[in-house]
Every structure is written in structure tokens, then in C-alpha cells.
Length: 316
Length: 222
Image (cartoon, rainbow over all chains, first blue to last red; front, top):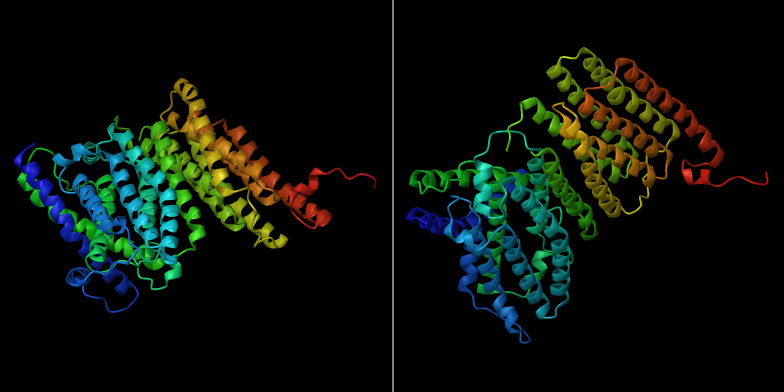
């Protein structure tokens, strides 16, 4: 553990916190451009969060402590995972605390709490959203695990920094297994982040909501934290995807300050391109019925399993 | 990780695509998309045969790549499209036996054939021996497709894609079969599809449907 490692650890977590709303704003901006509308300012998510923090919180009379606790748990889980994922440098001292499987566990923890809180008040839409969220989660989680297993098999370790180290410093070659798991990971991320083929983040119709339906009862600082957490979740998934499939520009583990300084613009550029790709996917596809979600996530699981099998057989 | 030469990497990639296409065909409901997938599989097969030919310098592999391209990418899909237009079964959306279950059975089959192929491919000395498992898996998946489908045309496409898998196995394990055998098989497939096309009309005339379950009963007392 070096000074550079600790610095890059803090820099990484801080950068994730600061960049997450910007990424959401950028995706919304790209979507507006692609739909030929005039775009909202890219800083809109920051303003929303600031506005929400200034308001007074209203909590239902029959809310249990779980309801009050959930925003902090979810936000904490997302910040923790942002600290684990090696998005800037592969030397992240905190990552020793958790490997790729624990990372999926952190996401699951956040999901369980948010679903519990949604059912806590007892409104119809809350429990509806919670059930749908668990439905999507139960389909998406195995596929995500399989993708991470494939990456772990390639590098021989489940620790995220060593996976990224191996993937970043390998010979340039065609890896069919990585291509398959990349597609599977994209599909899983779309579903997990409540993006269009599965859920519409911009909807105002409660009946079709999944993620938004669970947040209906929240207000003020609780809502601000949850919005920020979901922005962080999008950033975390993007960072995992970039680290696994485009691990170029990520600083190595030798405490090199220059490399870390170079990694920041590289990450921002990659996130910008990724955000545009996400907006493009969302623009060209239509939201599917909730019962079609297995038809979307089943192939994702299949692709992830095939990636693992192909890697085992071909060794590539 | 051992670095493979570029052509072996491309062949591995094509093998993986072949496997993916086999799965896509297994879970596809629409007949027209099925034919497109079959044509794509033929294209992947032709390209991989061409690469093996370019690397090993065996002239007859160029021929078989050309035959594959002409027959499986152009001729057979065209014949099948024409059949579907003539039979007017374009909108035939098939009731599959539960897609997720089929998919899981398919994964089990892939694991089985990969295990089966490992000892065999160790005997083979070719650069592409690792793809033998994928070739066997696509044969198995086409088998499964023929079992789970009820209509006649998807079964024929399953049969054809099984031949694709066998062809890929031959190229990957032994650098292809003798020219005479390949020509024979190609002609067999072509004639087979033509004859089956005639059969389709007969079956439909007899039963007013292409559902092969009607053929399972013996007609008695007539």
C-alpha cells in the first residue's frame, strides 16, 4: 500500500460521487439530441439533488425504521462498490476487502433494502415496484455472476484489481468469450439500471414503473440520496464494463502518479462514449412488457454461460 | 495464456459465432428469421473453411468453401424462401416447447459435447482442433432443434444445420474430406431439400397442415 494507492483510492471514490450525476445528465442530454429535442442542461441532476436536500422530508405515519434507514444503506452500498471497482488504477487498497462476488452481494443488499422499504408503507405501487424489481433482479443476477466468473477464469482470480490487471496487460488478441460476456453484461446493465428495454427512467405512468415506483413515497433528502445512489449504480456498472472490456488507460499498480493523472481523462472520455452508446440503445429500442423480461435476460444468461464454456474449450 | 496465430484466433471466433447461431436457431420462433440464421451459419462456415484453406494451402478446401458459399448462403435459403412463399406459411409462428427449458437442455448438451471432444481432439494434430467440441455441440443442438420442432420446415432447417455442424467438424479435425465425398454430400443436401419441398406439398394436401404430428398416427380402417 503506497501513498499513491491511498490517494488514487480516495480520488476514485470522490470522482465517482462527483461524476455520477454528470453521467446521468449526459445520457439525458444525448437522448434529447437523438430524439431531436432541445436538451436539458447537463447539470440538471446536480440541481435536482441540491433542491431536494434543501427541502423538508415528509415520512408516512406508518413508516418503520427500515424506511428511514434504506436511503443511507443503499447510498452506502453504492459508495462502497465505487471504491472497490478499479476504475482509475488497479492499486486500490480498499478492494482487498471485497472481490467480484462480494460486489454482486453489495448490489443485492441495496436491492433487498430498497424493495423492503417500498413494501414498508403498504401502498399498491410500492409493493408492485418491489415485486418487479426482485423479478428482474433474480433474472439478471445469475447472468452478472457468470460474466464475472468468465473474467475470473481468464485471470485466475476473483479479485477485481487482478482481473483488470490481467485483462489490461495481455497480448492483443481476439477473445470470443470476452465478446460474448460483453454483450451479456450490456444487457444485464440495461436491466439492472432500469433502462429502456426493461424499464423507462423517464416515465410518469405509475403502472409501468419498476424503479421509480419504489421511490414514490420518498421525499427531500431521502429521495436525493436514492437518486444519487441510482446515478452511482449506473456509473458503477459502466465502470465495471469499461474495466473488464476496455481496460485501456487504467493505471497499473506501481504507484505511478503520471499514470493516475492520465487515467482520469481516459475514464471521462470512455464514460462519455459509453453514455452516448447507452442513449443510442435507449433511443432505438422500445420498452418491453414486464413479462417479456425473461425473453430479454434469458439470452443474456445464455451468452454469459456460453462465454464461460467457450473460454474453457478454446482457452481464449 | 498462449498466443495463438491470428488465423487460429479468427477460426476460434467463427466457431464461437457458429455455436451462438446454433443457439439462436434453437430459440427462434419465426420461420423466416430461422432461414436468415441458417444463411448466416453457412457464411461463417464458408469463411472459416476459406481461412483454413488459405493457411494450409490445400486447393480442395477452396472448392469446398466455394460450394458452401454457393449452396448454403445462396441456393438453399432461396429455395426455402420460395417454398415458404408458395406454401404461404410465412407467418407461421411456432409454438415451441418452452424456450427457457430448451435453452437449458442446450447448455447441458454443449457441456456434454465439450467433454466428449476433449480426448478426441487431443489425437488430432491440426491447428483448429479445439473447435471440434463446438462442431459437435452444433450437431447436438441441431438434433435438439429437430426434436423440439413440430412443423416440417424448421425440422428440415435443423437437418441442414446439422450438416453444417458435421462439415465444420470435418474441417476442424481433419482439414476437410476428399473432394468426391464433399461433392456427394453437397449434392445430397441439395436434392434432399428439393425432394422434401415436394413432400411438403403432399403433406399439406393430405392433412391441410405442415404439423408433423399428423404423421404419427397410422390410418386404419380406410
